Image 1 (cartoon, one colour):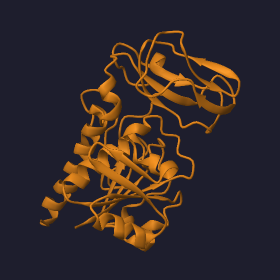
Image 2 (cartoon, one colour):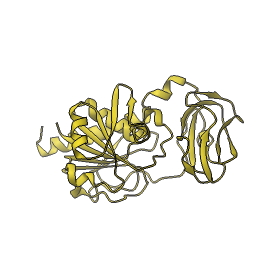
Image 3 (cartoon, rainbow, N blue to C red):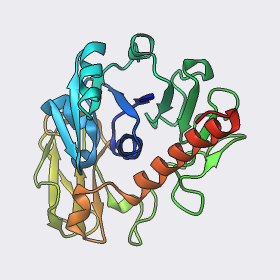
Length: 266
């Protein structure tokens, strides 16, 4: 099986990982020591805190080294390793690298990192630092492969869901340590307290289901994204990979097989 190293293990990166895993690729993911994923019920980054993480029918397992990565993928699971500098790239030698950190800038990925290198979202230029870029902006082009140029620049405005964009984001009220006042999957009304940053309450700006929330104990700064409310209010969606992550995963998969077809590789 071909080896894929995905930089990042948040919910969108996890959507990519699950699509590739189901198509027979061996998948490992790198993460930072204190992940700040809010949609952690559908993110393999949760394994950093808990040792493993089940997303739909796929298990992610926290690993400490290349040997443990190999053991994990051989058990048909996704490997997760704390490796912000991506030293795993040198020791594991993947066939494919997918940069899904979503930092909005390229933090160091190069076309020479693997046979196929894919950049996810803004910050990458196809043909310069990666072979193909996959669009992450909601709308007509979501998940589309870009073979020349870059993805749509970051606007700083969240995508529209259920008629709301920035209002659906839960943001820290101040610098401090985050604690949730509700659980993921809770239905809330506008004005409900959904968490605290330090001693300061954080209020919901829109009604709906709390789809994402930071892990308790994470240090936050004022205005930092700390959760997500889905105004459509479908509780079941909190435990399944989103339409956006699925579309982006499909774009990555298309990019891989298109490159292979052009090279005459099966």
